[in-house]
Image 1: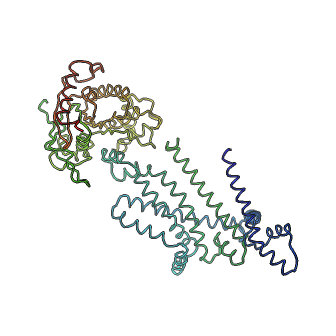
Image 2: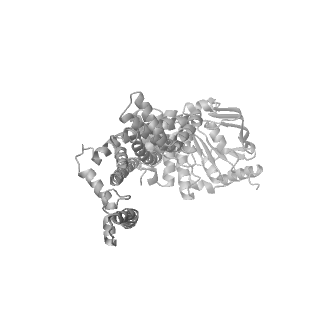
Image 3: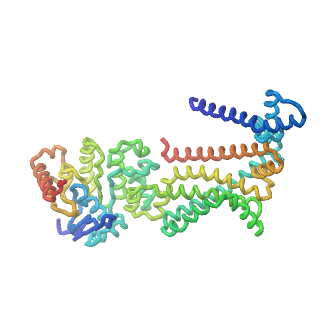
Length: 287
Length: 263
């Protein structure tokens, strides 16, 4: 309970600053309108108007919450206006991409740890791959795959996988190398095979690293999915809501979709956190 | 010595490590025979190569030249045949396995049947006086108990040889005395051949049938002392007898002769 107070204070400060910013950023529009109409606005009127604009530069927190509420609870879940519908579409792609990315990262990490040649050759490419902005590569992947007939979920999931394999790769290379000299010598004295050393020593040692990487990876997969949704015709997904919002200047819609994405990311990371606690506890590693 | 072939036989073993500061002569012309059932201690100051030699026997290091036979074959072949159990300075238990799980580790690697595993785990837990602790995790045990569990792990697959690298070095004197006494009983009961690295003179004299005194730069054997103390369990009080003092004195002289404590 003692932890809740600082969190609430920070939240409150953010909300206050946000309202201040909304007032400041939207005031110009209100003054402009008033000037055209030849009227004067008092401070009370100004506050009221800046907080209720249909297309504000910066929507006030209650407007975003309203948009979020309407998107989640105010629509049928099959409606194109429902954030649940779009969130679900994004989640589907994210999970597929995350699974593919995690698997790829895992396999590459195992290869890198066991083969010097792979260590020398794969790692530089993996690092180089992450220096290319995903925003630049996503449309090309979508277009190229569409030209060979691959559309829909899979191209988007590939972009998500492209972003999420990297943290898993880096974390697992570190994790699989976590066993110390003594533990590796011990396995040698038993004449354990490489596979046995991997399954009985390296993989269990790497688990704490794996979970840390998964949390970064799943967030990256979500970002990848949303970016991939933008050039994919922007029909479904939170990326689509962001894009259509920006076409029509629907700032409230944009912010609501952003918050939906943030909530989704928080839920995914929390789910991995719970899995981590359960697994480490069952392994006797949590005290 | 009954004419049987020695279980460990080193002839002219040399080991040179190539380091950034040039070659380091870790072992020079080491010759040693260990017979089945012997308790051999290696004693010397740090840098004398006692641990390195033990690791050579275990084929964790490879000598640069010379011949090193374990149970009649090369050390590497002996390692592959799982001829020895090795106890390290630290217990090195896997934190994600229970005590029983840790002891079961070599049995799983070596493909013992499930029933056999369970029986052996129970057996060695009893042997090291840890009955009832099988379900605990390593962090729930004291340092001394963890080291006993690591000895049980080394004993579980019943190798002929037990190699121990300063296993009690990190423990306090009282625990150490107790574990030394238990180790002697265990050795007597199991009839294993033990190689034991230490830098404590009383520990070496109390435990061993043979004491190998080593000196550094380059690491070599300066003396091999055959103990006149009785084989088998020895009371801790034996350390106050004149015979004990005499051997300890000879070890000390051996260490000095090798300029062991020059600074």
